[in-house]
View 1 (cartoon, rainbow, N blue to C red):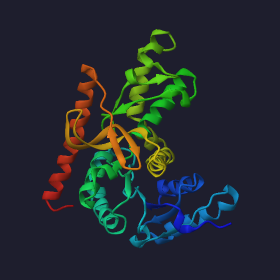
View 2: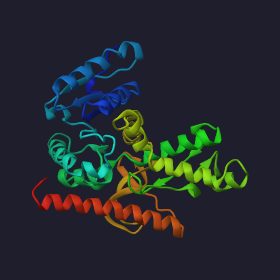
View 3: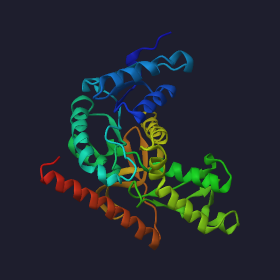
View 4: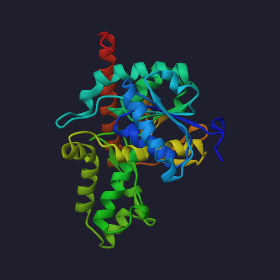
Length: 325
């Protein structure tokens, strides 16, 4: 029996590229709701919507899909995931994308404000921590309803690399990552565990060495660049899966605690900045930021990451003063 279209949540996807297409597929396969793909290339958005819709009979999902270049397609979406922007190419840093992607995000923010002002917005566009803050300000939305997908992806990479090192399942690993999305991120071994056993204890038990853990931490920090160098463009499978997990936590009020780029004011010594912290996501959006105790070295590394995010925000501010954005 066909489902009532109006009874399902609506998920708006801004950007119909590699990540956008996988987001649409995952949202449908998880039966999260109807999907609208908005892209400046109408044919790309319409084609991917049609292609995925044609798999419904095989995959057994129930969802209406539409695609196009009219922002009205996003109207009344409960969740909007923003992927639009230029991807990284080999040799590029996330910082190189500030000017070009800030212009794109400004346009997107206006569309969201007009079409889906009550949505929970997940930003994937790089440089992530700066772009999510720019998006929130331009759209003038509540801080708790705008979040950046970064820590979920970074912690997933950390878990994968640890699983390879230790020969265990990723599902048995809990990993903790703080800070900005980039080389300055802070994977915290002390708060990461295998089946509840903290990594420092894993080292003490002789499963591995601290040097190998340190190598995994370094690989995690540069995991995005590793993918870019291999494929010639930014990752898209893992980022899409990470954003969908966040959207699902909001739609299903799961009260999941994810490391993500959330607005911090007074926590971790951060005042008025989006940066990666553990946050509880439920029906209210970001319902709580979990503030843990950091050791001296951890605090120093986290502050360096905060400083890197702040510096990039200053770059954005200077570009805006110059009228380039």
